[in-house]
Figure 1 (cartoon, rainbow, N blue to C red):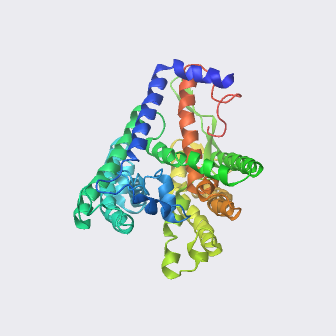
Figure 2: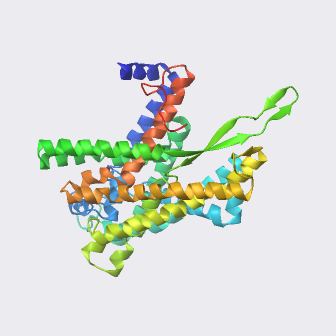
Figure 3: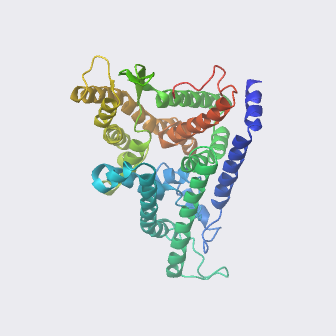
Length: 429
């Protein structure tokens, strides 16, 4: 009854209702486009290519993110991954290059400039990835119609138009994501990634249900629910550092004199360490053909993956969490940590706390990364095993929590109850 009442309250808020319907409409357009293959591709020949993405390779992971569009030679085959790559590069440039660091501090105008640079860099990344995808995947499996009555085109005539279509497809997806962010609910790009992942869930569930007995399948679902609960708890976990602000009297009003908190996330790096580590796991395959180092089920592969995830967690956390900036902001606003001197002592204190809480966060990420391999070791279907961990799990948890947070804010503004029985969703505030 509580759930039904919540749905009724959501429907009563006109703006929220329109935003949700707008978001669902654009996501439907994205999913329909994922089934439109590139001009000149033979649909019947795609089956061999599709089967090559059903393993645990990095290409299989990219296919999961695109909701199957990658293996279907779709116009949306590259998805938003080029945009994600460009965003990571721009973010790193904001740390290392003074010009981009200055733009980050310019507020809204700087954010618009950074977005423009990201779009230009996305096109540059697409100019590299699109021909590589066509050459190593589409043409490799000989799925281009050359001698039939369909188009009768050669490989050379296929490449240039296909590259243009792939670039246009990714830029259209970016536009959809921006429209969802502006006029819909939630973060558009994140929702597009999540909907691509979730689109594979029914097929994976059916494949697992038909290949295992009922009791074992129920046990797997219970374990999956426990993994989701653990991921939600860790993603929302924060270490709160108390900050006391000095009293200031301006005219007849008193400002400050209250205690607030700096929330330091246990998993500040989110999914980025896993993405970095998995992107580099092609290197062992260049050195050795041993399945232990090249297969997602190999012990060497997983050991290297765990080490890199832990290392990248510390690296990325050090990039996005700046204790010096936090200390300067506190000092500028008359704040201080009780028992800690302002200045260098405050910087050292925040850095020490962040270092200590990053260790369990990195171990958690490493565990999440290898959970799909552990699931496959118990003969769980490869497609279903992806949902037990890795980037798929963390993206779904993060996007769902962020979207629910926005929906809940609309409910609370209209004096309705939150989404949870006891009030607001815990752990985010």
